[in-house]
Image (cartoon, rainbow, N blue to C red; front, side, top):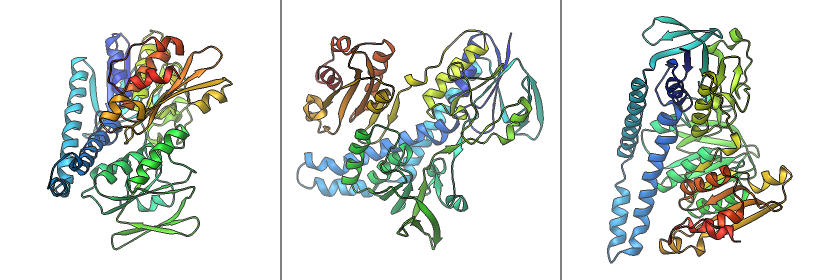
Length: 456
């Protein structure tokens, strides 16, 4: 029976532990904080609960158009009664429930869970400083490193740590501010801009790149930019923050061109960084940077019998990517060959409108030398979208013009984060556009726009 140590109990670590146990290994999982990691406790799940609340209050603000006399005042009363503490309590309850579920699964699988901080003595020996002040040494046949990442606060924001929010501490905000500046127009920045705007906060977003969502499809990013701008979010793109000061509860940010912006609160959503200093990676002969460690991108092997999954390897900072990596690493460590496909990972942004993509974008496909054909259907022509006043956005498929094979898809609009999996399945099956056209979609559904796109 193989003895495996998993370092980290987040979305990469606990699936790895469960997979290894299912394959007959004796598994010990070491977690220094909370099971579920950043995703469950300070990321994916909490943010989706908060976003759902924001979207509900946005509905409250707009529902009066379907009501009779006096509805506007009722809607205003309901919106003014929003309670941030209750919104947080709902989010925390969801987190607790899911964390307890993970603990149950690990216990059921016979996995030993240790609360403490791990470090390498060598590739077959892990030292654990337990949370009770004692330490223990684990001898093993292999290690899966899933220690995750943490919020990145570069200058000048580092001097404000504890005063401004990052993408983990924002969930502990004691009360809604009247004004909020978000530094970073990536996925996290845009999701919180959407959330806070929906809850009545005056939001400004500062992005160093020429546009928001610089890593996503340009047209998709433009739709979201226009939507949030119409709702009152102010954007400052192609500019950087050179200074930040706080006086009497007001933060003032200075831009590179000496312009300033002030707000009651600041969220630095600039990205994440890896810190492996306490793991003593030198004891296994591995170098690391703030971007993590380099692994075999298909097997996730770091060195012999040591694998690294999730944010720590820098392949894809997404929870579902980490989970798949954990399963692949565990399989390989247990002698069952498995391959991880980084290009098969779908991407999802839970704003309004939603944005989701899978496979290659048009720009990526062209960069790889494909002769690209795009197939786009606008939700303005979708029956269900028209019926529900959700016509913002489009669904686009990308194909190889020569072979007809699907290369990717970009969905912008209602249900995008759910329907992207239809594209993922088509990509996994290596379907052509012609084959995708043969799929029958129910009417009326948003999914019909995928079918419509295929015939364009």
